[in-house]
Length: 56
Image 1 (tube, one colour):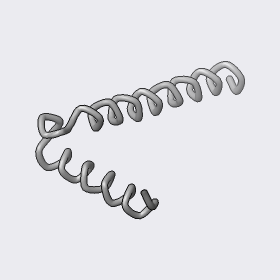
Image 2 (cartoon, helix red, strand yellow):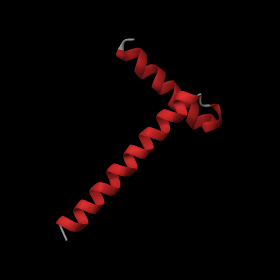
Image 3 (cartoon, helix red, strand yellow):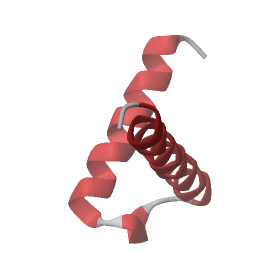
């Protein structure tokens, strides 16, 4: 699958999710959303903890 098709698929899924909510997502889209939001959360907490401890 070329990268343009992948990006188009992800874009369409994101727009559909924003318009219709998570109820219209397929199983793999819910898993992808969960993984992405979990990764962002973990990165944000890690960065915050590093800055608060190392750069008082």
